[in-house]
Image 1: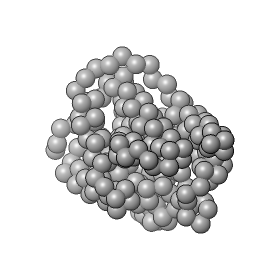
Image 2 (image 1 turned 90 degrees about the horizontal axis):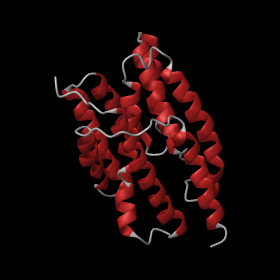
Image 3 (image 1 turned 120 degrees about the vertical axis):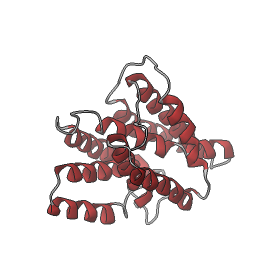
Length: 225
């Protein structure tokens, strides 16, 4: 057994806000500045690991999955992810015009796998594997992104070497997508957040609404630049 991950409600909320800011700066650099600011690209690579930890920790809260958190999370991710698909595709830069699906789909697939694993049974585990193989191939950050979320949840739920090794392997695999190691910038932020207590209100639906809204705003600005 390894040290258990502990975040105050305010600290995990702070991580979410840091991820939102980094994501926004990264998208501004990508779509409006045409990747002309290397430092914004670098710090933006920490966004996915931060969101993965936030999702994993919230799903690992005592009683969360038993209380229907997985189904609610998947529904919201699917709904707002579908809305975000319009500006996400319109901004361009995707393979074949639509692939991969945006990061909300990545987290929805990850949540589905976690839910199936918790429900248990050979059939559900087989479906979870199939969801990883097929779903991981059509979402943003692909299989490393999905594995990152699922392994983070496993560690938050029960800290074991196996979960940590898979998480680190997933972080390393992101270098294939990012072409750099900047995703590991998330590690000191995660460690720091686990050591402090911050008073911040927990705004459960902000991320869901913010994601399509900021993409739409950037799309509107891009059309006039």
